[in-house]
Image (cartoon, rainbow, N blue to C red):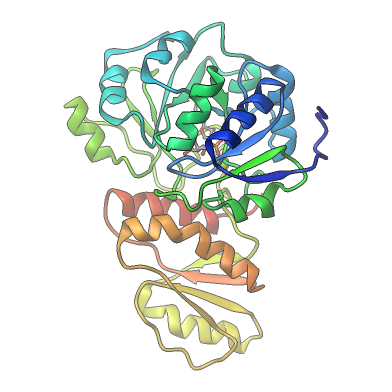
Length: 333
Ligand code: TXA
Ligand code: MG
């Protein structure tokens, strides 16, 4: 199997048979994109250094950015962690399988290639039935970042993956749109106090209620995870964040200056310039989370050079959506 970025990519509906064959391809060192409940992941056998290197090459990801290791079951955490604090077990019992990643101290079985040289590893037990079936069939951990080119918007549909990685992976298992739509909540439990490194659908409030203790939340817009650069999750179009009440006037001003503008708005807005594209976003946070990356990609497909939108307000999922939009609007690499 070729380890160069150049390979022919098969797109398979995620049937039982396709999952069995995909596991075989992983076993032989190949690259398989699979759906999870959050976003699609670009999988490689975590214990095969050549496969992990090929995965980094396919993504165009710098080698010092750690990737998450996916496990079939929470009990397998002991096979890769040097130490599992009691609170990690509490969180695992509460939220796995599900959209949560735990950063723990790693043992010798985890390679430097996967952790980017860090002494910790991010572990996740996904709940998506296809991810579960693939992990169970392979009977090994799967290292998988989101299945996009480095710095770009995570894919939440197989079509997004094709746009990003066709010709760079062996198989894409297609199981339709992802339920959650935002990447997992990352919780660092390797330090003295649990800390949320990346907000997600599992909120600091939910975590605190399981642990019966405060958790540290990330400071807004500060890079808190190695590999979490300010300009992550970015579409090609520039993203500008404006107050809801100014979306229409700012869009008209930019359109008048010759810009091709897309407005992602949660409430109907009236614009009087046919050059402005209004992409209606759902009002409910959970729906917006699910559709956010599709909306950002739609603006690119429509060849808009600027996206205007507003930050949702409030804690929980709204904060996770705001985090991704701030990164999309951040300075570019
Ligand atoms: O929902 C998700 O988490 C998806 C699906 C595929 O599981 N995966 C995902 O992976 O979003 P990726 O590589 O795009 O983002 C993983 C993030 C990176 O920002 C990385 O820096 C951080 O996790 N990370 C991984 N291992 C870490 C570690 N040991 N310490 C701190 N951060 C870590
Ligand atoms: Mg990613």
